[in-house]
Every structure is written in structure tokens, then in C-alpha cells.
Amino acid sequence: MKRKYEQIKKPLVKIQLIKPYVSIYKSNAKKRWLNRSLLDIYSKEFLMYDLNYYKAAIKNEQIYIKRKNLIIKNDPNIKIQSNDCLIHHVHRHEPPIDITHDIIINTDKLLIVNKSGTLPVHPSGYYNLNSLINIIKTKYHENQLYPINRLDTCTSGLVIFSKTKQYANELSSHINSANKNSKNSLIKYYIARVIGNIGQNKIQIDDGIGKLNPQLYGFRRVIDNSINGIKCSTIIEPLWYDIDTNTSLVKIQPLTGRSHQIRVHLSSLGHAIINDVLYNGPLLSPI
Image 1 (tube, rainbow, N blue to C red):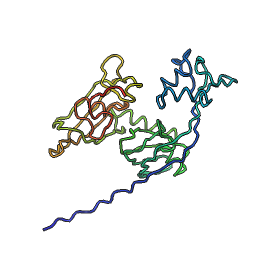
Image 2 (cartoon, rainbow, N blue to C red):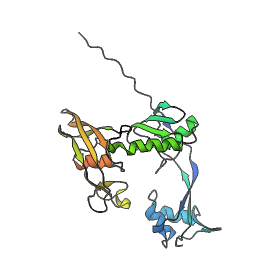
Image 3 (cartoon, rainbow, N blue to C red):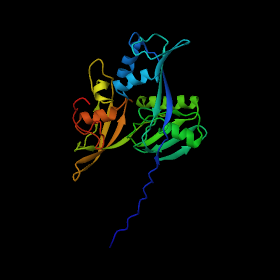
Image 4 (spheres, one colour):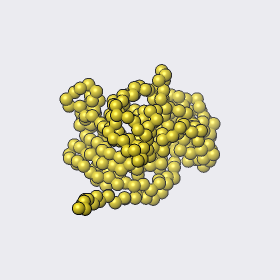
């Protein structure tokens, strides 16, 4: 007797291509920037472009300083002062992106969206208009959205938005109380497929996380249990092992919410997420 399998319809991929446009970035001077040159700040703090780009941008007056009522242009060596505003005019070419998403819940106070594993939640790096929050605001005419949880660009799943600041504070308090055994707490779980046989026992990792030199290694983070490391805790529960592909399916509960926490902790065990281009492999030479 032949078995009948229900055909699963995969969602259509929706590619969005944004027409190039000019965007203006304004950055108020930080304490660590004081008495450093304009060129030094951009070349070492803003890593989207290389040194030659920033030299040309300052020369072409795309980058300049607003100091009270003064506009200071074409001076790469000018020292940053308190209350300076650094301004950068960028001709943006956002990469095309799969904007596939589903609205799960939409009420007067709450919006829950299931996003794809290609879509950034917030404007960052190369993406601005091609970010979930800006897509939602434009497509569904939602002017005020307060994100309650955050997912990495390469992570698919539910993103919760509040439509009011008061409700956002309430939801955030429920998430923050997840480790205090509160009956009203919201607990976040993730499912991941990782390299190798991770075993059958539940694991808790309490290793801290630190940053590498961003100029050499970009956004990659590593285990750091020194005084400089940020304390993190993750619970990993093995669900299933596939001998044919030598991969394990795991359920993950982050007890803290640090950037790349799950990815770093899994990689530190030697069981990186299978399609994680940043952590699936040894620490490479500087890029």
C-alpha cells in the first residue's frame, strides 16, 4: 500500500529592490571621540567603508561637522569637541533582500510577525528601508512600533512589536521576569540544527562573551570569562540526532539576551549552527 503524503506549499520568495537614494546620518559626539580627528573617528568607528572612501567623502563635503551654528567642512584633521554633530551624506544602494513575512497577530496594541531568516529587524549596516520594522511601517501604515524581542538577520521566527510605549514596558517586564519563576513571564525558545552529535543530556553554558577587534574580525564575538566579558547563560536541550547528516536538532533557552549569545555558546561546544557563516568554523585570520 502506497503512503499518501500531504504536499506542503512553500511560501513564495518576495524580493524587494530599493531604488538608490541619499541618506543623511547624524551622530552626536561621544565622550571617547573627544580630541580625536574627524578622519580617525570615521575610519575606526564606522567600518562600513575603508579609509580612502572617508578621505574622499570629507574632501567632497559629504562628511562634515556641525558645531553650534558653524558648519565645518573639508578638514579631516579637525578635533572633535563636546556637542559636535557629525554628519554623513551617503548615496545608499541597499542589496536586494527576501522580505517574506507573515502577520500572526495584529490588534490595537500588539503586532506579531513571523520573519524569514534573511531579513534584518532593525536598520543596520547595508540595510535601512529593507528592514522588517521599516517594511511593516510602510506596508501596514504603523507609525509607532516598539520591538519587544530581537532576532539576528539570519534567524527566522516571531518578532513581537507593541503599538504603545506603555504596553511595550509591560511586555518587556514579562520577558525580563522569565528567570524569576513569575507566572506571567514570557520565555523565549529557539530551535537550531547544529553540527555533530551533541549528546542526550541538557547542557547549561554560563561562559561570558567578549568582542574581538571589529576592524579585524567584524561583528564576531568569542568566549571571554575575564572581567571584560559579558556574563551570559544558555540552556541547550538535545532533541534529535541524524546520523546520515551528522547533525543534531536542539531546543535552546537563553537565560540572558546578549548579541550572538546562542551562536557563540554553540560554537564553543564544537556544535555550531550548520549555516552560520560567522561561527561555523575556526577563528580565521583577520579579514
